[in-house]
Image (cartoon, rainbow, N blue to C red; front, side, top):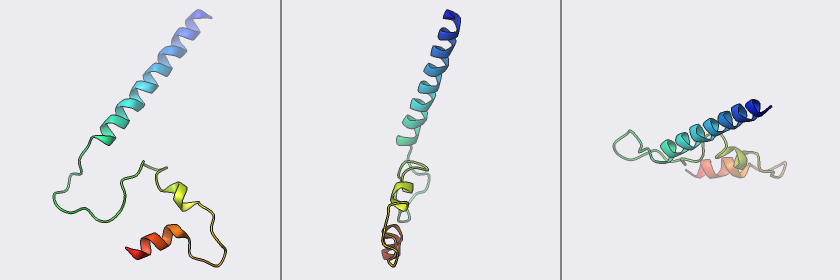
Amino acid sequence: MSFMWTVASLVIALVVVRISHWLYRWSNTKPKCIGKLPPGSMGFPIIGETIHFFKPYGFYEIPPFLKKRLLR
């Protein structure tokens, strides 16, 4: 039983280290292009703008997510 807890703790620690390393690299990288970036956000991957996309809105109106992009 003790061996299982040790292995589980090790796996969890490795996952946490890997995610932390990925977040560090993602937040400290510079864009590879030289010059002006296109309009948009560099939000958190996958989740970043998904929450704004799924926000509720009225049936007969344009979603706020699309309104914001149409203004660009």
